[in-house]
Image (tube, rainbow, N blue to C red; front, side, top):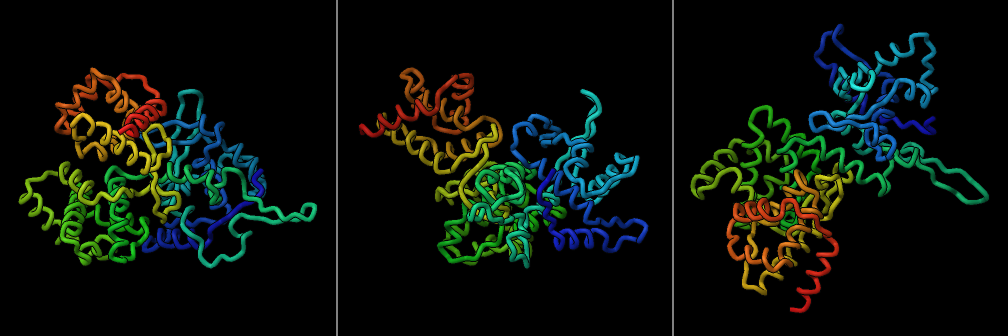
Length: 416
């Protein structure tokens, strides 16, 4: 049984009022407190890292779905008072309302018996993570204090509560938010992170990523996402190159970005033609023209910037680790008169997120440097294509120990 139930009444009321706005009465769907309590409970299970629940999940179209039974919902929430003989139908109707208004997605499987799986929509996740307004009491955030032997103890809803702001739940939120971003939304996230130091240099107030995402999604209904991200890359490169406060301000403030998008699209087209760039090469150029070593994490809290990313294995990595590893490789290669290609950092970050767990991939890089025969190939690596071909031919299947190889490399670099 859940000990606490927290409901963000204001946020959900505003959401459902907006959903029903302009709809004829017969098409409106309204939610009550029981509906929201059910949603909050499903959301908690969909975002927890509890091993037993993780084992019940499946992947559908690159999205993680969690198996949840009606029986568990009713048993863990007795105050729902679903006493009717047709409990399943009553509960099913309430869950279907949550699906219809766009808070949940549902998947029905008959592979191993009939099972229903759930995942949160991006809107559903936003509603459970956005900051509370007008709340001052800790009990309203799911906390409770009681005296035991003269000691005040602060209890959270549970070890895996989605309302908890403790470090153990940080990665859960990062994983879920990142998993539900589109390919180009992920690019936007990294882009903004790369610009943080530049924003700070000019004392520019930066809106939350949540606000940028809302504007980006609104614009994507009118333009192609690839067009939008390319236009922002072009403006960022020009702004950094020309040290232009006003040009950076356009990106820092999503409202300015929205108002200026037509101009940015034309500007990007002219810029790419003049510089002979395509969509891929402008992205690479952006990474290294704005490189400060500070990237955006895939969000510990929806509106906070820090410095982490989630690799293909679901492991949280700090961007400082990537910076350090690239530095080690560069310094080691210098001893042999070899220059490390500049694209290595952005390519590693991209591959670690999408394809290969970070430590496996970088461990293979380290191995190639410490192996005399493989090291010879680095003399002929001049482009990213050269590196990719080298990796695929000689490193793709290597089993490595990242930590051991890194220590070896650090010793050799320190000798110099």
